[in-house]
Length: 272
Image 1 (cartoon, rainbow, N blue to C red):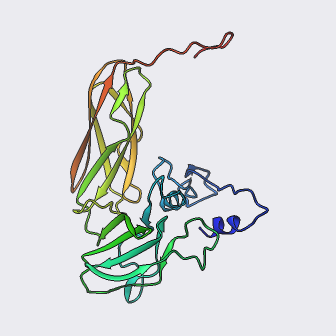
Image 2 (image 1 turned 180 degrees about the vertical axis):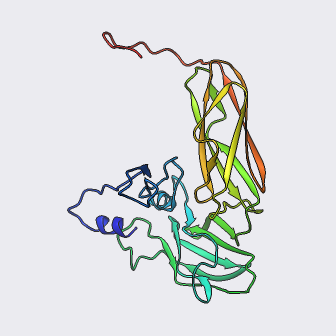
Image 3 (image 1 turned 90 degrees about the horizontal axis):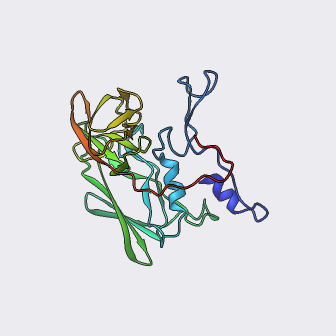
């Protein structure tokens, strides 16, 4: 947000290039020691990191209303508890903040520190949450021209309880090469992704499809992904994921006949 604010404020700069879009495999002399560079806006399996939601927040709200708290609702490392600062990426005009159904404030975008961004983030200096107190929920209500545009409700993080499995697509062409991604999340009882989860997760596939990816896989910040590729057969595909100590989850995909028109190759081209 700081860098983009700077480049938006330079009239002689037509744009900016961000490095980099995706986390990627690298060599042993670079990165965190696990041969992965974590500079990406999304991770190596194309799952959004916090920075991705900053880019979303710069959209015109007519295209999409965005409100994303860039935090996990935990006590953190503050000596007396609390959340400071609380940063929210949003393209709303104002934001009402409630804690346990009690309104704390109406916040405005931080135009003092981000005067050039189309939609500055909301930065709240402190949310009181003393150690030993019971926080039920934090509710953020984004408004545009005084009308509620979106709302986000966060509950205090519980323990890892259940898996969630989501496929990017519900259908695949039965052509032997069509594929989709399956994202798995370790969640607490309220369905929130548990960011400290690094559980080992296994996958099983039934039906006319092939699993592509690590098996089993270790979760990273509570999530991971694998891919499923079709065969030349049609039918229903069932995918199940499981991990010790958590409720399993499943997803269904249909492999259907390939009805895509064949596109002829240009004259002289070599097909593969």
